[in-house]
Structure formats: C-alpha cells, structure tokens
Image (cartoon, rainbow, N blue to C red; front, top):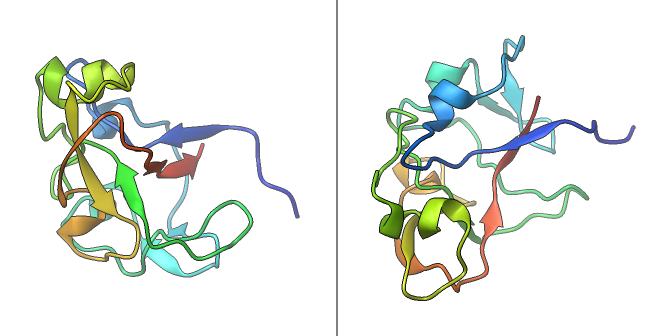
Length: 130
C-alpha cells in the first residue's frame, strides 16, 4: 500500500496557526506509520500528550530526531508569533533566525516543543495525510 498524495506539515507561523489551518480531516483516530494510535482527534493531538510517538519516516524507519514546528503541544497555536522566531515564516535557513523544535521520540510536550534552534539546522517535519 503506497502513501497518499496530500500531506500537511505541522508548523505554525505568525499568520497561520496549524490548528486553524489544518485540513478538514474526517478521521476518528490518527495513527503513526507503524499503525500505533497517536491521537483520537485534532484537539487530542494538542492536549500535551500523544499516545505514541510520531517517529517513523515514509519508509517506516524509526527516527529519534529533531522536528521543526513552532506549534504549541497544548493548543496547536504558534509558540512564537514573531517572524524572527519561526524561521522567517519558515522561508529562511539563516542562522540569524530561530524557531522552536520538538523531538520525534517524545509523547509529552517535547514532541513539538523542546528548545530553540537556528534555522540553519537541518530538522525533520511532522506531516499528516489530508
């Protein structure tokens, strides 16, 4: 079974909160690439705890890596709503800009919010099928 063609990254900018801009899903549950339950709804995804990590790539390989996001793990809204702290609206790879990142192996708030890093860092993105 191949992957679908419509995907959205879990990132937030000054103009766009992921939870407001997210696709109109008609899902009752969100599973990771290994079929493990992550959340039972969009609000559940952003209640501060996910049931299993989103830590597998499109080939189902386990990754424990840093992940860009700037999205609050408890609200789905931007952590930083100023351009210099969301990689210039996620259009810059300059070390002069920063953004919040999370860890793919986490099931707590660190899944989207661990620390700040310069935008010249190469991190992954969480993507959810539309």
